[in-house]
Amino acid sequence: MSRAVVERLMLGLVRGIAFAVLAATLLLVGSIAWRGARVVTWGFIAGAPTEGMTAGGIFPAIFGTLCITLLMIVMALPLGVCAAIYMTEYAGDTRTARIIRASVNNLAGVPSIVFGLFGVGFFILFIGRSIDRVRGGGLLFGQPAMLWAAATLAVLVLPVIIVSTAEALNAVPRSHREASFALGATRWQTVSRVVLPQAKAGILTGSILSISRGAGETAPILFTGCAYFLPRLPVVHLQVPLIGMSIPMINPLDQFMELSYHIFIMATQSTDAAVTRPIQYGTTLVLVGLTVMLNMGAIALRARYRGRPVAR
Image 1 (tube, helix red, strand yellow):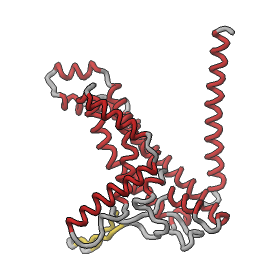
Image 2 (image 1 turned 30 degrees about the vertical axis):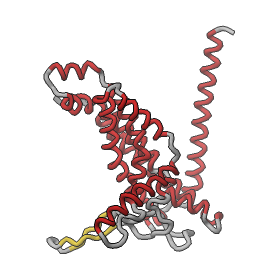
Image 3 (image 1 turned 180 degrees about the horizontal axis):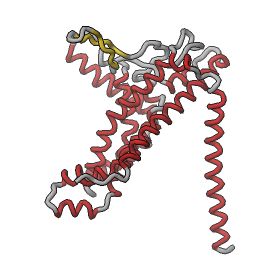
Image 4 (image 1 turned 90 degrees about the vertical axis):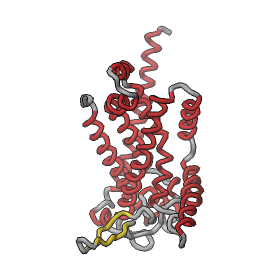
């Protein structure tokens, strides 16, 4: 068999696999959209769930998903970027750098349920209870809360951010760094003014991937802050004497509802799955749409920075 025939066969095989994956994705999304569109209404999106979870809306779950995803990014992105900067710009090929890279690779392969158990043991029982012992009084930090659930998800997505950021930093030509050093710039000035501006698109790619993974995870938040039925929003009203009114603010120490956990509970714990199945499809469609919108926002921000010249 000639080399050209083998090449055509392999090309056809690769194309067939690609189209099969595309068809499976379209079939899955199409099925969710077809069955979920019948349920998704304004009342379903903006309303609160009722007792029994067989009626009402999912707005508290939407609100909780948005809050925990944004809080996760706020926690994970600076840590991941700083770790990648140290690995690529400072550590070099030392033993410490190799240990960090091996740890990141191992962390990426840990099952998500293990992160959930880690969050309970470390964030809630160790850090939270320690803070409560220092401050005195009852449990405040040492119980499941949005703060600890977001911190657990931040640990989960750290490898994605670190790897994508490191690849973006390594993609910056070495000659740009050498030119900056030749002009008398320090290493940090080179990193902050030359390397990072050119790597912004890759860093935002890491945030996009982390949003996609974190927004749909259920196991890490299963024990760290999610609630089955919580029709109220996780907010606290702060009284401002100067203006004579209260301002609602997100309470990170409160429990919350979340879309993926909502789907999981209705699919596995409902006494009548036939009644809740339409709600499951509607909630899934909203979760997919919300994830797409968050990704589109990050993609638009990445496109804005891509191609922008480095500030002098």
